[in-house]
Image (cartoon, rainbow, N blue to C red; front, side, top):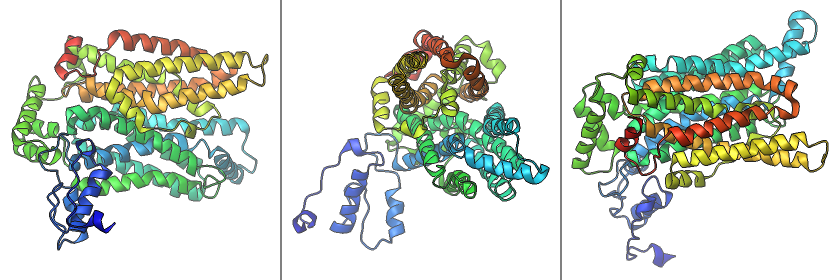
Length: 516
């Protein structure tokens, strides 16, 4: 061991594949700093006579301008915290109530009993439960509806901060008012409020990611946002289990976990910049240059070329295009309707039917970094098409297994469970991730806020429709309840294959040429 760590030991070669926030890369720096006690060849940091906070600060500073990847470590930190801390509450809120339904029933029944002197009727309980679950979608719809308007008043960063404040307010109402008094009205109102930032985040995070990250790393960072969404659902299912914290006494503590990412973001965002596109629109070219120097590990000439490219992208308009202006131009109109169809068809695969009305725990879905590698290799559109094909297969197998269960009562239920697992794993690991990549690739700066804003509205409308009609499908169609989603998924597949361009390895100009 002494020979390995001795000052005479030559420096290990830098590995470019580990450039962005790599544990291996950082560990090489730490060994140089603390073992060799000399300036690291990897980061230019001297370990001698530095306080720990100074070393951490220097490690998080922008890399030297010789890295092959364009995003600096500072940029990676900004993107990581912005995406994960915003998408985590969305996934958490949508799933956390599922395991806690027995606890909520007990709380609501006690409240109703104390007010009316009789137990809570089953019909009233089902109505209250529907409101409690669905009002987060109503809030998301409202948030998505006003997303574009808010972007004309607030910067991207400030709107993200407002959304996180709204999330904290909604969680506080649920936990402190609903938790302490048992008021189901407070829980429903709180769910409505926490839905507002969900609608804002879903349309805003793809914009922020596309405007901060270097273009060739868009796929990775858009994928990470979706991964954090799925990770949140896994955490929610785990902590909300009835045998854990999801009981009638501790359920407010479970809900309060969703406020922690918002608190963390509000603290960390003080060190985050505005997006370069926003600064250019505000005429702050000097600040844009300074921000890009922190966000990129490129040479000065490359940074100036990127600024020039950004200016060329937005030179066709002084402001973000309105819906009326988007619809007047054939190219923008086709992109706009493509975004609407991508968002709307996404939910019409029946995802919410699975999430709210099946007994298979979402924790089984899992997530792997392999999905990000596959998307980066084959492209978001190819992976999205493959995911929809897999979803259609799962829906067909599920329908067949339910119809034939009376004839094979031992085997068919097992096949049904496998088909649900295939659906959830496909949706979680690939479909949800690839969607954000495609949306980022086909939209440009002038229409991105408008298209993604209205697209998120389409998402929440279809999400509510699927959630609302699912119990009626179960009651009236029985074993054929999921068959309607086979039809809508096939239509979605046709749209993806016929009306969207290939994006893998294509420049923005080549992609936009398809829509002209």
